Figure 1 (tube, rainbow, N blue to C red):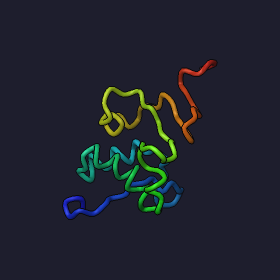
Figure 2: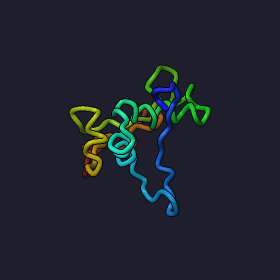
Figure 3: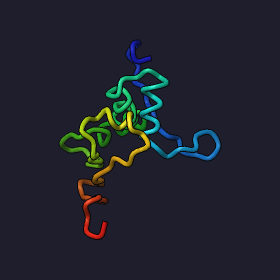
Figure 4: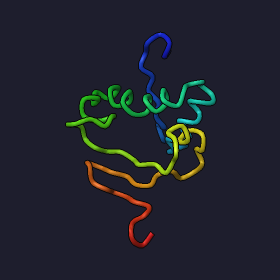
Length: 109
């Protein structure tokens, strides 16, 4: 599909019937190991491509001026680790609407 120029979209579809995982790193890992996608292709599929599939690509899905700033800063030395070490908790901090919503280094943690 990628070679044909199609925009692939990946998500968890978290539900107890057909997709009982809420784990995006697991989805990234499956995309890379079972669907033979490159890590960059898989990350694109779960971010900007997913946003455009919902008709919201102009608002969300990538870090650009004027878009809503929802993003995660991962404790990883390379983006490819997100799919490779899918059982490891990578998030260092989470931002929603440009404001910090979670930080592993927050007081009391």
